[in-house]
Image (cartoon, one colour):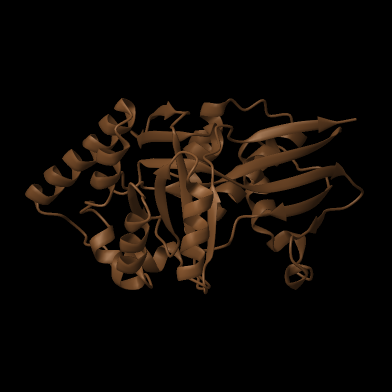
Amino acid sequence: MKSFQISVPATSANVGPGFDSMGLALKLYLTLQVEESGQWEFIPPTVSNSDIPYEENFIYKIAKQIAERYNKTLPPCKVTEISDIPLARGLGSSASAILAGIEIANQVCHLNLSDDDKLRLGTVIEGHPDNIAPALFGGLVISTDFGEEIVHMDLPNLELDTVVYIPNIKLKTEASRKVLPEAYPMKTAVKSSGIANLVVAALLQGDYTLAGRMMEKDLFHEPFRKELIPNYDKIREDAKGLGAYGTILSGAGPTMISFVPAGQGTTIAGALQQILPDYKVKALNMCTEGLQVFYQE
C-alpha cells in the first residue's frame, strides 16, 4: 500500500434560508497522513486525545463501517491527524471526519468509489448533504436528497470573502435542532423558500448586496436558534457597519459567518477582532477544491 494524504475542507451549512440543502467549503482543513503499519494507530491533533483507543476514534469507526458494507477488512494503518477545524462550532467537523473515514476505506480496501458513491454514503451517515456535498466538491453547493438520488448544483467561484466568528463555546447540532419546530405554517414555508430562491438567484447574478440581505431573512431556523447564540444581533450589526453584505449562522452555530466584499475580509476581520476579543475572528476564502488525496512513494 502506498502512503497517502487526505485533505478535507471545513464547511458552513445552510447559508441562511438554504436549510439542510446549501453549504460552502472554507479554507480550514482536516488532514490525515495514512501509512501502512503492523497495527492500527491514530495520532490525534491534540495530546488530550492521545489515550483514546483507535477503536473509539470516530474516523476509524466510519472507515470500518464502510469497509464492512463492501465485505472488506481494513488493513492496519498508522493515521496522523492534523485539523484546523474546531469541534462542535458549526464548521462541519463531523462531515469532514465522515468523508475522511470513507476515503480511508476507499483507498486501503480498493473500493473505487465514485464521487456520487461518497456523497450517498456520507449523506446516509450525516443525515443530510448540506455539509457533505461542499466538503466533497468544494465551492458552494446546493443539494437535495431524493432518497434514490442526491441532486446537486455546484457554484465553485463567487467573488466574495468570508469572515467567521468562532466563540469559546461548543454547541452540539442535536441541541440546536431541539429548538426547531416540528412543522411550519404553509405561508412561512412558502415565504422562506422564496427567500432561499432569491439568495441563489442573486448569487448567480453577482448581486451580493441582495444575496446578503436575503440571507439574513431566513425563517426556517435562525429565528429559533438565535437565542442560543451569544452576541447574535451585535455581530450582525457591527459587521454590517463595516461593510458586510450579510451575516448568518454557520450551520447550527455557535459560529457566525459574514459574506463581505472580495479583498476586504482581512480588514473587516481585524476590526471585528478588536470588538470581539473573546472570539477567534478569521478571514477565510472559500475553498474551491473539496476532498483531495495525495499519493506518496
